[in-house]
Length: 53
Image 1: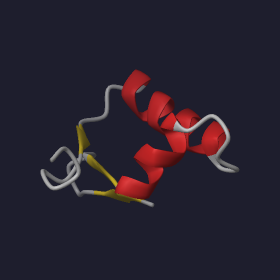
Image 2 (image 1 turned 90 degrees about the vertical axis):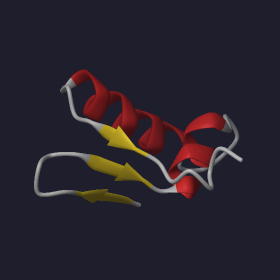
Image 3 (image 1 turned 120 degrees about the vertical axis):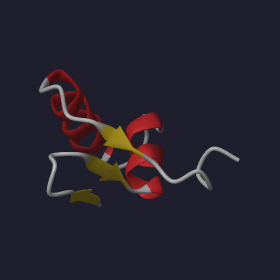
């Protein structure tokens, strides 16, 4: 799940990051495409600091 902020920033949920990184995940292509598109569109991407522990 991704949540769009009023300023166009996008919070990327931990599950979306996992799906984007696990080739075997059923939602891999969707998650990777969503993150890639947002990045290429110049969106500011955010993740929780707890995700990177």
